[in-house]
Length: 614
Image (tube, rainbow, N blue to C red; front, side, top):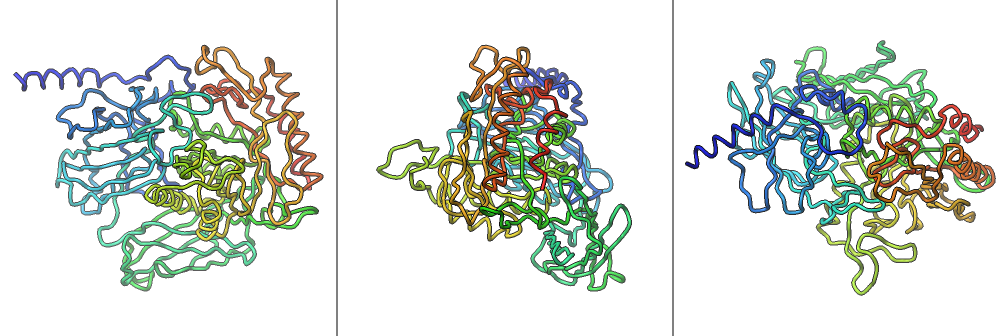
């Protein structure tokens, strides 16, 4: 009887699996209509470390969401479109995951013929939050962290031929946990958004040489000496008898080449260097070739990786009143949008690469030269498009929750402006710092990233100046905005205030050793019927208006104050809230579904141009 019941359940599941479609009645973007489960997010996921031998595993997976005591399922009762989070419409599930739930995924695949005789790597670009993985019922490893990529060598778990299986189990406490999670909240209200659980970036296989392969590369430009330093990193700490040939290309023509060893800095001179900037985002192509033997001309080629880099420098310089931000040794005002990276249909995951690219293109068209990526870390391809299109990135570390200081009142999530930094459990602290290090390491090579922002508005803020020094030690080539808004501390490279009043507050005019920034301002609301996440809830902005004309006039009123601060007190940067509406917030330059641009792009671009005049 049990066997028959199981067969019925499996049969019913098989029927339902045939028809994927978005779920729910919320607004969606136009890209949602173009999704094909067989080709969803099938672009190469790591443009700065690209190989030819790979296989995308995105698409329809079996799914079961069960309680905390559940064992590996014998059957699955749903399907999900990977790489969309369980709560999203585009996943085809759209269900809220409870803190104690286990999310079970399963799919089968067959290795391509050209994987034969090679080491096979299983890559996850991001899973939220705690992950365990089995291949053909053999446990291959686990991972904790919602925004960083991870890899398992599954070679020994694979069958010689035929169908292979992957099972993934994920748990995610969302806002009930202490992990870095940004604005995810189990109960949405105000500035908090729908949580995003499970696999939310590309899953893929990669075939590499069994003997040795390149695992990473560190690329550091130095425009003052017209050179780039490259450190090739192998999959094993045992260097052995290997060499790496690095070739630099400019518009398809090789302009430099040098051979060195893994883990050893290799300096390459770049003659007549072309500098990367928002006005001219020039990228050099880089090819890395790993050879067995100390001489690349006679050694055996084991691995080839394609990459790229930009020659640029971010630093502080002296202005008339205080320090100012410099790009390539020249002052440049950073004017950007606060970009939450949230989507009405995909939540954390954009519907497609083209959709993700659109937001960056529109930001550029409106005359912004920077994006502050707000307490979320995007897929590598987002950074690729910023690199390629030329927009600077201030990258936030996603915030988490901490416990309040013993004996002190206050929210466990926030530190007020006059409060001391809060206590944090050592285990939580270690995990936060591990993920912070991974964020910096994984996006170190991206020329668009110019500022790291470890804390925002006191959310999960602790040991601020120690963390600021740690970030600077990890990456001395970029600037550190130790804390953006509210709980300011006397450390980092930037003094950053937030001001949402109609008449803006100004940064401290007595600041001499750091650049000053208005890290958030604006937030002007304009609700457009037919493009609201929930028409029945309070849709809000810090000030709200009923027409595009009123919206522009009040935007200009605030913008003119930014211009005056730049002119009279060397303000170096400002960030307007925000790129798009998000759920109950209607203070975007575009609606949440990206269907309506609330401003005339050319008019905004002309208005903004005054900020970039020397």
